[in-house]
Image (cartoon, rainbow, N blue to C red; front, side, top):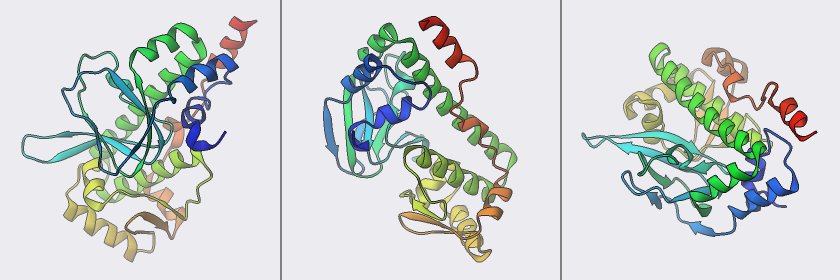
Length: 251
C-alpha cells in the first residue's frame, strides 16, 4: 500500500508487529481524507476536542500565541503522526494546530481512540509509545534550551528532524526537506529571528550546514553531530520487554 495511503501504519507499526485486525482498526482512521492547503487551520486553542487528525502527507504544527503577540511552536508533525492525541482527555484543545505545508489529512472522531484501546493491546501500547516520544522530544528541547547554545540547539533540532524523516522513508542527511522558515525555527527553539539568522550564517561560514528556503544542506556531518552532542536514545523505537510480554499474552 502506498505511503500516503497508510502513513499511520508506518508510524505505529514501528513499535509492534500488527495483526490484520490491528491494521483494520488503524485504517478505519484514514477513511475520511481531506486535501489541505498550506497554513490551513485545523483547530484553535479552546476549541472542543472532538476530532483528531492523521497526517497522510505534508507537515503540520501545534502552537500557542502569547499575550505579547509572539508565537511558540510546540510540535512539528510529520506524515503518520496523530495530531491532537495529547489533548484526548481534555474537554478543549490546549494548543492551536495548523498545516505548515500543503498536504493530506484524515479526520476521525476522538472516540475512535477508545475503540482502539478496547480492541487491541498492541495498538494501545503503540499509541502510548507515540505520545511518550512526543513528550521526550519536548523534554529534550527544554533541556537543550537550558544547557546549550543557540548553535547547538539548531543543530540538534536538524538532526532530530532528519531521524524522524528517515523513519518514514530513507532520507539523505546531506540534503533533506525542511520547510520551516528562520522565523519558525526561532518559534520552535525559543530564539529570536536575529539570533537564528546570525547562527545560521555562522554555521555556513564554518562549513557545517546551509539552510536553504525549503531544505537543509549538510556540509560536515561529523562536526554537526559532535557539536550538537546528539544522543538518539529518546527517539528509539525499542520497547524493551513489552514485545515479549505481548507474545506471552497471545500464547
